[in-house]
Length: 324
Image (tube, rainbow, N blue to C red; front, top):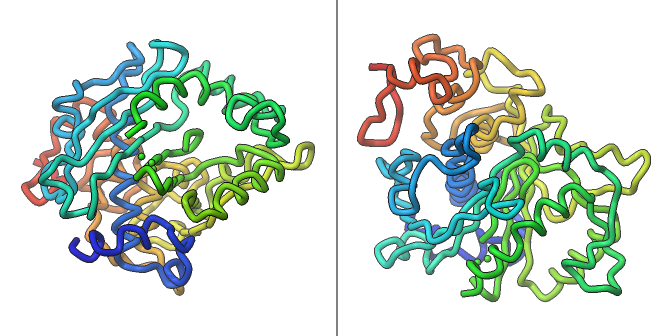
């Protein structure tokens, strides 16, 4: 972990991850998984019935089971909501004093979950591009998908208040912020804007302070959306491609499975220039939190999502999960 602390700017994309992706640098591999786990905690603790978090800010990471065996330390300072206070979308967290040594700084982390509710799916379906004047001013030519722009701007005021002193991360429909350097790690994200947005992103990144790394699973259809046959949608930033269809740990390798965040992190742990081999001790049981995709039949399917199966699991001191 010490090398992560000394390489934090490099790992956060100061040189746009040049010479770090092929082959994937070992510290960057752990760095991407770390932020992905923090993103996953939003979905894990989202209450489908209330639209609110299943934990307080004070005990958030304890309830999310990100304490045992985890050297990265954070404290949640703010919860973020879309559509006023109706739907919880994410959080802002900071490293306490005893956590700075691991990441090499006071890290301010913004984590956004993926799409959950019917309303959000309806927002996402609005593929018409719109000039992003709310983000870049009235003269901008940058075009963003209307649905995503609406969801983001509904939480933007809160985000601005809570990140003034930040790192943004996100899964699927949502997309890190030290004040002089903004980095986003995006897992399975769709195209959110047209070529005009990409040009604007490039302009902002030319100063060296804005960076984005997209992690994409080769069989996940979501990063290929919206279809650009009608509108000129494209991605921004750099790309890390993983391919979990090469994993021998999985029995299910369909497109829906490929979009699961824990499957994505498994892909990051195992991606190689040739074949697939786990280079990080990432618990494979995490892939069956919401799925039934593992060859290992000792792990109950959907064990985080199904109360009866969750009661069958126990987290060991090192952080891995086992069946009781």
